[in-house]
Length: 552
Image (tube, rainbow, N blue to C red):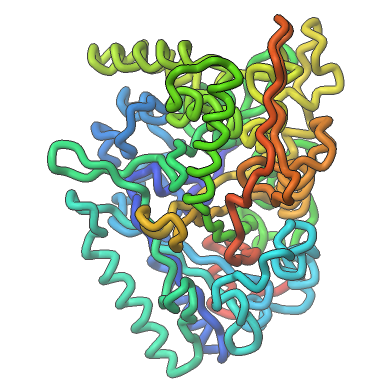
């Protein structure tokens, strides 16, 4: 039976990646509760403006939300008029999508009952700072933004209010974002010190974290892209779970985004992997904070600000590209640099996976095929091409000669690679281990793109039912360790911690080729702070605001 979700009870940022749905601008506000009663009144004042996952009226389906040359399954579905989400149309699409989340100490400050709080998972109670050694963040604690370094007492982060907004043709946020910002600040002022907006979200002590998709310009108009500051395309293959999408959208997008079945078909993941109060991949409904109405349809989120060292990345790619060109006789340095970049990531810079286009020549042919389909407005062809961005496994590449075993893409979602029979082409099992480690990835880039050493990177949001089993496992075991991939202690080439001997091995093919080692990797990404948050349902928000959380 098909899962039916109460979309109006679920906060919209869980099911919707706002950046890809017409909201390329964002502001995140961090607040401290100093008076419980005033804090609850604040929650009640915010609650009516919360954007839920309910279907939107007039979703502007005729215009792609991310202006790129990459076809996405979602964009093809939208162009054909297929509803993204199940359920009846209930609401007009907002200009600004607003959501709210709470740290454990935020719930304490709002005087949620002890019997409810003690049902929360240990890692959420600890918070991200206390788990720094598990995440590999302990090396960078003194480099965090002030809002995280000073998260103590009356400057502790208790609440996160997020605002994702549409954009004007000139690339600026729509005026409604300033209006909602003024409204939020007015609520804080009205509380007379009961709830305080914290500053220190950047090097200049900004009052909020500003974010924006990286923009391109075409025909005098600016468009959001799916690029980040390293120039890489992002946002492919996000998990798809039961009840999240309508039937046709689910059928298309679960390919590569769901779980792999023994017959090599794809199915949506269990709802409980991403929403509390629902059955997970173990066919269980995990224990949660009581009463069940408080937890059901809520979830957890890891907020991480990740600084990208663009100068170090560009210099390293140039250096390794020159070595690669000399070793393999490539005349064009730019071609060698693109190859090295793709081997580190697992995708070419426009998002085409190496498993779909293993060589530079095949990538060039792929792009030409895509351009021709765009020129002809051939929707069936575009749909077929879009699936190639996500419909692949690693069974035919056990040694990583096509896509290196420890590339970022293969670490983040190993797909079938951890199947006990991996490498045996007669076997086609998926892996329950991988199905239980998936996370919904949300967020946007922050900062400018000019200064190589400036304040820019990605605000990375990982949404899942279990921070320990999903987010922390992936971060510790797959990003900061290599044993699952037979790579010893080699870390992820993009987001891992790199000591002076950090490397990526590009395996030699079986035809007598030579391996290539990207050695002496610099540190490319550093955490600048963050914390763990609980994203409650609308029902739970009502209970919090009214102060009626009854654990019995």
